[in-house]
Amino acid sequence: MTKPMDEMTWQEVEPGGVISEPGCASCYHTGTWRSEKPVYNPDKCIRCQRCFIMCPDASIKPDFESNCMVWDYDYCKGCGICAYECPVGAIEMVQEDE
Image 1 (cartoon, rainbow, N blue to C red):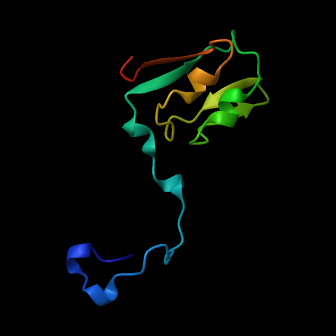
Image 2: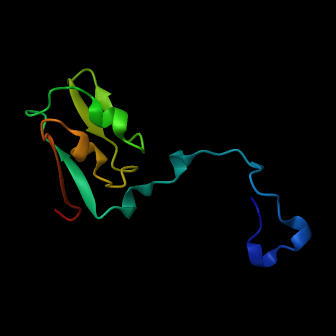
């Protein structure tokens, strides 16, 4: 793990764009950022999977057993692209506390 910036000298600062430690975004649960969340109505859904395709966070996955879409709210930032792109209005954005 790297040192905090206030403990580094200029000689220890790594050049930008260099990946010095392996990692992935799966350990960063970014869903706590959102103020609105998508609510899915499977009865209206036509299974076009447009929400899955357009989600910038890959937080929507098709569940082939139940023939529905499933949201991973740990990573959903509440951007609303899924609701905007849904051609039949099966996704509604609501306040996070509801």
